[in-house]
Length: 299
Image (tube, one colour):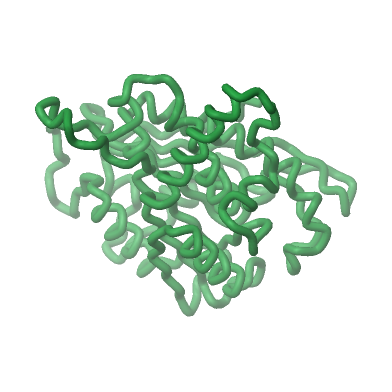
């Protein structure tokens, strides 16, 4: 299913260097997420992320209304949850919605990578259930990296004179998750992927070979995509131990994780220190930033 999206174009109209796809939390909307993150969440200089990064295109997908089986009504959620205080309670209910949402987010990542010039220019982010979905989506991007597209569309460009050099690794620019957790923890990377069943079950030898290429590309993306995790100790909905578990699981998959724990901030990004940390993390990923009083880069 194609998800609705709210898009904020780069503040600098002359150049688009990166795209940041941000998934809202359970019961929220893309419009509210956009307003809360880009208008009201500020760093220590009272600047929003869109002010600091004027060459970024912001994409806010909208989760579909899904049935809350425990309560019998629908609201926007990436997947159903039986007990928010114990994510393992009736965990099997999470798989169908998570499968559909990951497939939809993967299509958005593919489309945005083509617009901006490669997966390495795409940041995938989310808060709460959106972050949990983003983490699983990252694990299933092997198909995007392995598809038959010109290499420069999906991988970082390299000098044409260095044809004997191996191509750079497939990766996202970054994964960023706030106040979130990893659904279905405790397994290997392959076991975690298999939980939502997006892989092919066709026994055809050619398909099996294609699946192996997808798996290898997926592993490459996982190993080489840097991660930022932020969690507040006073989060009343997703307890900090869930965030630490996500950190440990991703590190177990071979990922480099920048873990940031804050004393307060509730179920949201810590501000202003947490936003400062996000700014420094994204700057380190090569995203052009403009400090207060500076002129926007025009390239």
